[in-house]
Length: 287
Image (cartoon, rainbow, N blue to C red; front, side):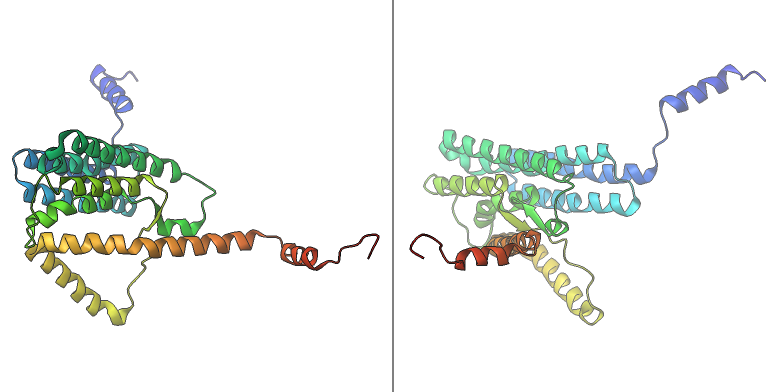
């Protein structure tokens, strides 16, 4: 039975353009929305609306935390989505914060300020590229999932904007040429934390909340959200300092687990052999 031309064309179109499930499209839409927020933050900074720019970066960070979880929950993870997420993160948490900081105060020392902005953006790109390479490492221990290698890009963007929070908060730290070198040094320091191999907590080890603590946890989360909505800049300062304060503990825990892994890999008789070699008497002609 011959197929009519219209049916043949439809069949050919389906072969060329296979249908994509909604569960695959939805996480990518969230990623694109986060990208729009990052680009909008740049626009707000160009218009000297820095508080709106900060809020746009915060919304982008929330959306970035959601898109991957939505993809895993819907079983819609794809290679395309992973690449799109990485590119969006570079704009949202590398380019956008760098330009916001430069427009706000780093331009007071034009050459050094622009170099600091470039260093921050490049560090974010290197951090994301390293993450993409390490995520497929089959030899990585399971407990490594509890740590990030280097400060994650969203956290780096939020922490790097702290000079802006200090200016917009009740503290009213001035945006002046005198303080610009300190702001530049701080931004470069955050960039180095992103590009470094210093471990940071990932938060993935947090499991289910025990039933008896559910009400307390809900109360704490609601209180934090209320404070963040009422005093956004002050809360962002506190959250940034809290994140920085966790770094020494993350380093200690990471080194302890690494040492435990190395000890577990040693052969059973290795320690005994080493001790025997240390206490063995020296033989010679005068023994």
